[in-house]
Image (cartoon, rainbow, N blue to C red; front, side, top):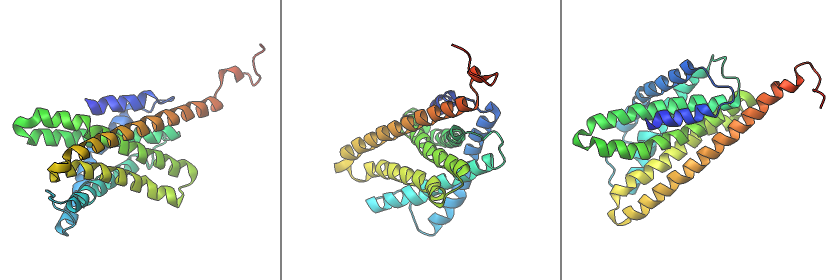
Length: 239
């Protein structure tokens, strides 16, 4: 439910809404990106780049980046590319945010479902915690990815933007997971780390909301330039 609410929030800010079938196709593609992420993380784990249950801060960093951020954001970016590579409806900058969020929240929704199903009697606690933290996290990572994906599409694909579209979501995701894993590693510092994680999530939400509103407003103004009812006959109406 939180994933769908956040998806609706982004969708509702679109001045020219995207076809619902494509948005839900992106949501489904996000679920499929879990398989892509597993195909990437499996070999990385066999290479010894991370362990599933970190006991030190360094291990927490490794599993956060090599076990989660890199494979998951790579999988989502691949599925976003597959969704948009021949998409004629991708004709406005804000569309990049809509489609990236649909993929990111599709991933988050089905990942959460897997965690809840495997949690047994702790399902309510797990579903609540992940709804409050994991879903908004993936939402924020997707905004960063969608913003730079649109820059690549509309600004000619500068090398810096091609790097940022993958790197920034990975860095945000890795930093988020590092703090989350570190809570259980250092009981003495767990309170401080928990506060830092909550603050980080708050800043992510502020960044995400600001980016959404800025892009939505820019989209509205750009659309008004293409069509303004006052100029239907080629001349301004007389006042």
